[in-house]
Image (cartoon, rainbow, N blue to C red; front, side):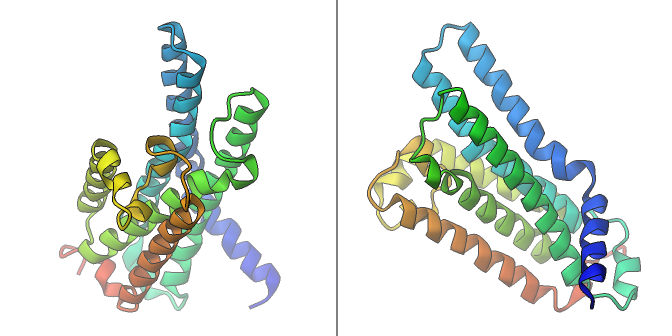
Length: 232
């Protein structure tokens, strides 16, 4: 396939992702800014404002992008048509999820620069700032895609993501205190802090996400797994 043809495919699948690619991360950041504004209006201190902005990057945006990715995988209404075409549907889904990740990462980079410019950055050295939001995004997207492919259910995939996200928020201190469990904590930066081994832990979390995506791709070698009972 020529470079131009590949470029056209990427543009097509990015357009297919449409509003979800941008609205999900942008909506998450708007929610973050709204919470921050409310906190400022309630007399919150500067450090609390910084923490809220960092939480938006590490916790809220990743969840929004993962939910959008699940919808792109399990909510595609043209699955039967796609599966009847000679094109590789796994590659098509990969481009769509990749578009969502790319959009989310772009929004996070711009927002991080804005927070830094405003003097409100409270995370690690800015050169390491992608480790704040990229690993939890990759991990949640990987988990959501894997559950969506395994169960063929948007409800189960989104519910599973929400349950894990909430459980980790509630038990963050306990997970962070366990050396073996800390690499799997989505919110280590905001709930535990940048401790020794933080960069390694974040890298391992991203690896978990990549492994889950690979497992989903393996399952998709049987593309009929995407069909519900009604569609089959």
